Image (cartoon, rainbow, N blue to C red; front, side, top):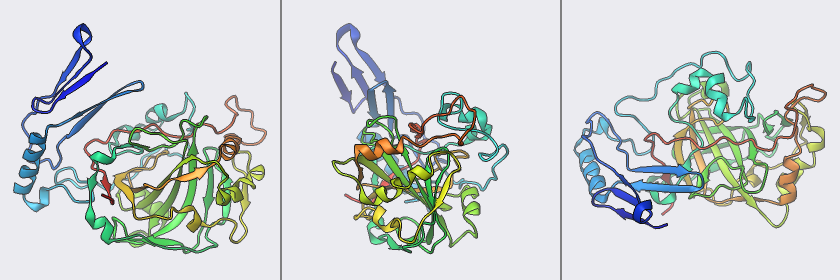
Length: 367
C-alpha cells in the first residue's frame, strides 16, 4: 500500500487504483477570538496510523495572524490558554475516587471512568498523550532555566500496595525548581505503570513507541498552595508537576529499584504497607542523569479524579529494568488479603490509554 501527500491541496491518498482512499482537508475561516489552530490530524486504525498535516502555507498564515493579534490573545509560550479564557478553578463534584471503586478491568477500567465519574466527561486536557518530537515546539527559554534538585536522602518513608500500583510516599524536604514554572515543588510520592507483557505498559507514547513501563514522580507547588490536596484540587496547571520516566527492558537489574522489589513480599495485597529505613531508596538516583532534555505540556493526573492540575515533564532519557523485575511487578495483587472478590488477581495492566490533545501544544527543551 502506498501513500502520497499533497501539501498544496492539503490532502492524503492511501492505496492504489480501486483501493485508493483520499482524505481532503478544507480550511475554514479562523475565529479571531481563538489562540490556537489545528495543525495536524492523527487517524488510528488498529496498528495503522495516518498523520495529516496542515500545509506550510496554512502554518505561515497562522503565524502572521498570531503576530497581528494583541499580546493578550496570543498563544502563551508555555502555559496553554484557550483564547482569552484561562482555565477556571473548579471544585471536584461527588462521587470522588476514594468513595467509588475504579480499576483497570473491563467493567471499571479507563473506558468506563466517564460513566463512574460523570464529571470526567467535561474534561478536555487529559493525560497521557502521544508525543511526536518533530511536532513539538522547541522552547529555548527552557534551557535557560535548568532543573535544580535538592534531595533529602530520607524523604522516602513508606512503601504501599494501593491496589493500582506500588507507591512510595514521603514527607521529607526534597524539592525541585527550575524548568517551565518559576515556583518550587516538593516531593509527594512516586509510583509506576506497567503492562501484562513487555510490549506495553508506559502511559505516554513517544514517536509511536510504547515502552513496557513508566515511573511517575509526583511533586506539588509549595509556592502557591498550602497542602498537596489543595494543589491537586486547584484545577490549575501549576498545582502539581509530575515527572515521567519511560522504562525500557535492560539486560541487567536496576539496583535502586531492586531495593523496593526486595520488600514486595510484605506488600503483596492491596492496603499492605511497610516503613522504609533511612536511605532504603534514593530519589535522586531514580532521576535521569540528564534532567535538562524533556518534553512538557499541560495535562492531568492519569487516575481518577484525573484533575487537570499537572504540568507534565516527560524526560527524554529512559530508565532500564530487567525482565525479571517486570515479572516481579506483575505479582502484586489488586485486592485485599482474604477479600472474596471475583476480580482478585495480579496488577498486570495498570496504564491509561492516550488522550486527545484538543489544541494543546507540547514543548521540548532540546533541539
